Image 1 (spheres, rainbow, N blue to C red):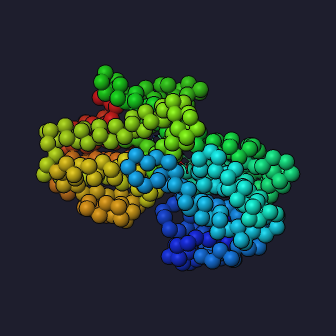
Image 2: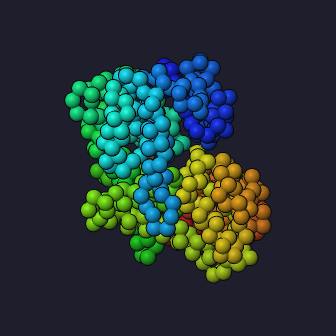
Image 3: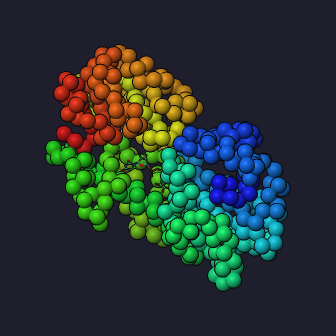
Length: 420
Ligand code: UGA
């Protein structure tokens, strides 16, 4: 926002995060973000605080806090504690005409409820819902040049005013004809969860085909290429492998299902439960494939795991398939040495019991098998010579990202998910 010319103040309750941001240090790995942060802070148009009262004269307030899955066995719904606390905390500081803009991914019906709260506490302020579609790893690009803008606004004059305020915020993107959909609160909230549910379904569809391919000797990657040439289907998000993880897709399809149940639409969204199961079964298959490739027993076998982040160009390990598989292999008796270009420190926080290496060279020493579980560019480029220090000649490709012929021609046992 500061890069786009606005004066921005960022608020968080976490003092350590605010202190780091104030000196231009991003709290997570995201390509291009540190440079942007440094230049924006230097212009004076971006500053950070933990003191909510400092936002009192702002025209627009974005609420971008997390909506994680609720904790507890069998609990799938979104936890709205942080969104509610942020909006309630803002109300005393809302100036006349101020607009609160929800960015967080929320169950449908939340915006209408929060709009009432805002109007009750600050009668001359209003609320809009403006879902966020950025992808980790491309956050800067997706934010500066979004592929669409969706405004969920109230009916009547308040909605028109909110639309005009958002148009001013997004003037740069609108100048390049970015599509903009102005709609009601419920549609805006649903656009977000429907988009993520569709993407998750697409990935699980191809992973279901991988299961069929495994049973029949077919090749799922060629299948994906062939169906992807049909423009109605499209090749993107048809990469089979360990499946989806991260802080969004898994918890969003679960929360959507939970909201469906509340709305009496349990059967309508039941298929999302199936998508979740297909996705989680890929992790079981990876553990099985490793066991099979190591003679049917994991105990005492040395396994190098390359990749821990839920996807490349991220240090995010929330619900990461790679980290999950690494932990399960160790639970089943393997000696796991795991590495990742960016996600070792984040993995250590939630899986301190694993052994980590800082480089591939270190991780593969005396390994009986090498597993590639996140398709970082540097792992895709690995050659048999790079891994010659491994004891075994077994490479397992959890993301269908390696050149099968290259490995097999060098006398390695190459196995992957959904390919013979
Ligand atoms: C996802 C959406 O793509 C964004 O549009 C959305 O804004 C974001 O969630 C969010 O709700 O905040 P992100 O979680 O960054 O973005 O990651 P994706 O690129 O969607 O990948 C999700 C997972 O699916 C990763 O684990 C990735 O490895 C996996 N994936 C992706 C596949 O297994 N196969 C594919 O073909 C594509």
